[in-house]
Amino acid sequence: MIVDVENVSKRFGARTAVDRLTLQVPPGICFGLLGPNGAGKTTTMRMVYGATRPTSGAIRVFGLDISKNARAVRARLGVTLQQNVLIEALTPEENLRVFGRYHLLREPQLSQRVGELIELLELASHAKVPVKQLSGGFQRRLAIALSLMNRPELLILDEPTTGLDPAVRLALWGRIRELRAAGATVMLSTHYMDEAERLCDRVAIISAGRVVDHGPPAELIARHLAPEAVEIDCSPEEEALLLAGLGAPRHRMRVGGRIMVYLDNAAPLIDQIRRREPERLHSLVIRPANLEDVFLKLTGTMLEAGT
Amino acid sequence: MSVSAPHALAVWGRNASMYRRTWKRNILPNFFEPVFYLASIGLGVGAYITTMGGTSYLAFLAPGLVAVAAMNGASFEVTYNIYVRLHFEKAYDAMLTTPIEPDDVLAGEILWAITRGGIYGGCFFVVVTLAGLAPLPAALWALPLIPLTGLLFASVGMVFSLKIPEIDLFSFYFTLFLTPLFLFSDVFFPLQERLPEQWLWLGEALPLLHPVRLARAAFRGEASPILLWDLGYMLGLSALLLAWARRGVRNRLTN
Ligand SMILES: Nc1ncnc2c1ncn2[C@@H]1O[C@H](COP(=O)(O)OP(=O)(O)OP(=O)(O)O)[C@@H](O)[C@H]1O
Ligand SMILES: [Mg+2]
Picture 1 (tube, rainbow over the protein chains, first blue to last red):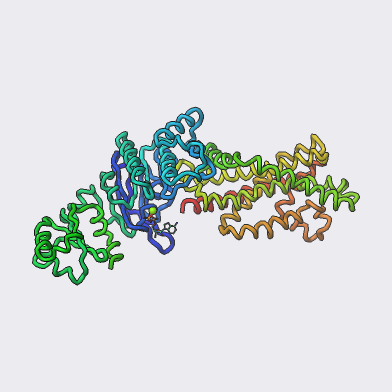
Picture 2 (cartoon, rainbow over the protein chains, first blue to last red):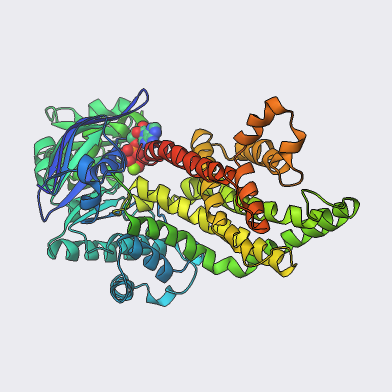
């Protein structure tokens, strides 16, 4: 295992941020950490690279106990923090140089690596402009470039694409796939379920510091929900009527004035709506159940927010 | 965990990279300040004093002010500037994603504070020398004192910063600690001559007293056994405080 988190808890005073959490990341995969705000994703990642000490439990990275080998472990991994930490007064090139020295790169390797990273993340156009004048997307790319400085075997990305436009996101996904293809292991957190579904070989859904379930996205979907999702506008009072005579669906969720029903076969429900209340059809969406549905089911956050 | 010198230098290097951009603007005031002090107090007040401790008042004043400059330079770094790096720039969050450890951060920051203290004190020394107040070559002995003073006040300030992490409380450190030190540590008048016998120990407890006495001895080219106590005090207190700061930095950075 590249990352082996065993029964780890972290308490900040009275608050338990991570609660007896266990997870394993095998080599060469992209592993997704999903969970609502405050679930403990960042805290878990910080413990993995040794920036936060667990209250209890054991963490091994590359087979090494992180509490005793932080320096050696961190020499082999890279981290993109949730919030960019850049030196705003300096240019991207200068930022890269400062960061390269944290990894003890010396000339001529330092300049060479800085040049490679500027090229890899397409930073050349603004490499000599102070960071504070750059767009959010550009700053994020620079933050990711920093985390690649030491050619990491393990890349830890805390919400790498939050706040990025679709084109930049797509480009970043491409980079992450390339890195994984080149043999790196990736551990990322995200609030975008489409991102997790497309990018991650395995995910763990955590809530209140605990792993609620984990596995490949497709397996999680199959395990928790019927394959066909029907979304339709419908008040709580109309719900019984809408679903009358169809047998109990395996799962349904409400988000405000909208209901989502998960079925093995959506056809009977669609037929029924077409016959009884055709005016509802304009709000109807039929789609495959996805990771977002599983996330909502397992963490329950949207359900509460909706009622 | 122990300090890795190259990693500590990388921490130092971050600060140096930022300072390099603005040093030309920042360094000028360092030259004006001593000129103002020497003109106002040395020439202005000094005009009413024929001799102090056997020299002109200006010559009495100069070595102490060099030590004060080193103290101030180092103190600003380990208070306000460290606060900014910790809370606003989150510099240490970034460092802790690399092989840099909290011990390296402490060592690098202390080294940087010494550097800044050295720049302040060095500028002061240059002005004092140009004014003919530093008899060469004897006064050159004051040069190693500048980083030593920086080390002492970097250590004191670091412990204070770790204890009191609110930025608005730093002004207390400057007005209630450093300013009285500045005024009562032998810089402006020979403290030992004004203190009653039974209070002499209190004077000896003041951290600034020791670099000032050492600097004055260097300027006069006179060695005496008490200087060993001064050196021992500076090194001993620095070591003690740094050992304490080590735990504090580790707890603060890896919470
Ligand atoms: N240094 C700290 N001191 C006190 N509480 C903390 C600290 N760091 C995190 N917490 C708390 O621990 C819990 C988990 O926080 P964490 O940042 O790990 O969540 P997250 O899953 O990353 O959330 P988000 O999606 O919002 O980034 C939260 O309740 C948070 O307030
Ligand atoms: Mg987070």
